[in-house]
Image (cartoon, rainbow, N blue to C red; front, side):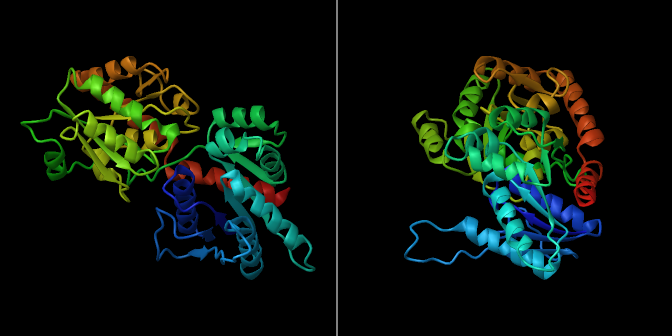
Length: 379
């Protein structure tokens, strides 16, 4: 198949999943053209069958804001014509599903052009935050309904989409996935020693996110402070975003600079996860929880909020722990138990890794997208 993959270039989960899907499809023999404002965070060049198409947004003094929706729609239509696309796969409803619809209308008005079919994948905040906002809700719902196929990354997100927008379109649930050959524990003793010297530290606690309010990085610090009452631990914060500066000030104000490290965005998470003893994800909302899945694959026990799709991948007390978002002390208690009870930790990480290998590896999930493509082409 000839596929146009549309996504955000940022470090967020939707861009990561779209880029990994594009790579996996190219490896499986499809031609994939990834369309975005710039090469995405996980972009890998030199893969046969995989190409990148930038969206150019020319500045005009008349426009106070960049007209990305119009430029993206035009780019999708151009690529569809030039490269004879079979599928346009829009990741994240806003504005990609809308741009795909506009491109579809542009192509439909052109004689002798076979228009590609549109598949929209819903990732989370495009529905739970942006899509449910009255300023966007009607156009988001319209764009989703006009897609030829719709997928969501969890049962929770499917239910949220129907409840928030009244979507009548069939929504397939296709979970996020990992390259399980890459995401496995690969210990790095030098990195471990640098982050957690034996004379100062017994355990490493890690959090990975884009530091947006929904990730509640302030609660990560709250939980960590409680854990430190029982365990000599250090906190490693991986990522960047709008809430980082405020958290850095708080770390200084609370005299935790020796116990907390900000390491910024990391292209390769495996080394950081492979030295960790505990992963914290106390989000206000997670429609899937890709960061949790990555930790589980690297044998890091996870303590997370019982929100969205997280309970679908983490069985409480078996493959990790999920707690009420406001239960900060409970999260800390679960963390201390995992850090101080080797048998509990081994049992939890073994069960978590088995779930990842049996349900969420690339060869198990990518064929589900291929089946979705075949179905919309046949409909």
